[in-house]
Length: 352
Image (cartoon, rainbow, N blue to C red; front, side):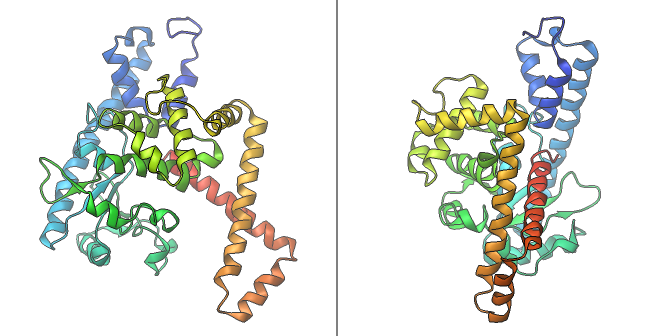
């Protein structure tokens, strides 16, 4: 079915674009290719309003970035901006209003990590969810999210670009070594172009379990397309420790964008199976639920195993955890935690 068909389901189209946070860029593409005439007038007006609001917010985020830089530079700290904000100030997008940004992520050297957090607390930023704070910052790769009234976005101060599980292959030292200066934003840096792609893959497919769940964020897919205008992905996919998953992700992105061999030339059996899995999960409610249940079970049981491993130095706690192996309620509790993690990942993927 084409846009010009009278029975085209615009509600489903808009719901999908909204859920994947790509309405502003959809509006710009429709405008560029003279497709707005096919869109109902009310909907066209709605798309324009969303784009305008997002562009205004991103302009405010750019001003906030300069304020953040001033604060950090005064203390001798040069941040490295990552994800959407880093892409925005590095000119990755054709229009500053096309990318919806959740918060401002930036990396600082680990030695400056707590100092940076203190600087912003002194400026009135507070922790969003203080009840969830763990005193051991090593258990997470960034400081708890900070917010402040009358600023465009919350901030996340990272000491590592990714969680510990993936930091061996993509750690702060590597990012700092290849950091890139940005014209017009003195005193700060962004990720190297190839590192932008690596972080996009790790964040969307590994940390947020997109690969396991068969989920592709169209916002991340569009970022990948924008990166492809800057460099070839061949070396990245060849050197990745998650090569098969990385190639499968790139091939799935090509399919969603209808770009044959644009990101990676050729096909692998693994990528074919992943695309099949993605299609089955997205077009079959039953398979989607079964896959979700499988993931929840694996996460829940994995959390239980982690508790046992962490209690190695405490014989009393270790014996207690081992006894729990024979209690059904213990498995139920861990599975509930796994379900909560799934819901958290799902809401995180749609966070503004």
